[in-house]
Amino acid sequence: AQKVTQAQTEISVVEKEDVTLDCVYETRDTTYYLFWYKQPPSGELVFLIRRNSFDEQNEISGRYSWNFQKSTSSFNFTITASQVVDSAVYFCALIKINQAGTALIFGKGTTLSVSS
Amino acid sequence: DSGVTQTPKHLITATGQRVTLRCSPRSGDLSVYWYQQSLDQGLQFLIQYYNGEERAKGNILERFSAQQFPDLHSELNLSSLELGDSALYFCASSAHAGSGDEQFFGPGTRLTVL
Image (tube, rainbow over all chains, first blue to last red; front, side):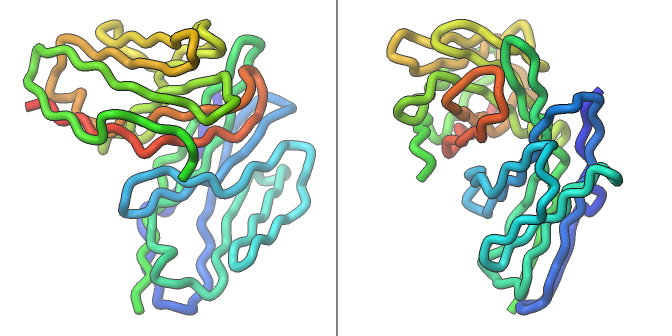
């Protein structure tokens, strides 16, 4: 069965600290996609990144970076120099694909609180 | 703004009642997904439609049903409501059906069952 585990329920940091959010996934598929979404206090789900199973290159987007390691089935997310606006719940997700359709399997989320 | 719209934003109703949640996908997207977010279950996939046809089904209760219309908007019908159905219901859309496309989420409908 496919599963996503985000072991960190809550993380609190002070502004300008770096923080890493962990994500471990389980799947038997050889082709799969991983995602990160952000849910700010306003409640909407904001897409951050998609990574396919054949691309293990790390990705950097501004203060955000992602480390994908198939050997450890992990897809970790690092925020550099955190800001108060980064306070949100962050979800890691795995897409389950069959011939008919798809579904996102979400982890439980990590609540990040950044204080000034 | 993701381009996915959902109405209403909030809904308060009583146990035993029936409600309809509405979703319009992003322009050009043919797939619509419904997800439920509750404190105890987290974010759970309910159902997917692609161009009017049901394509994937998750943990959707028999009391819940959905459809996608020719203009591609979708409705999620929840009947015989129970207290435990109180949750945030998200609609998402993507271009295709069985692929790894990113799904773009609407703002959600917060359902409160009293």
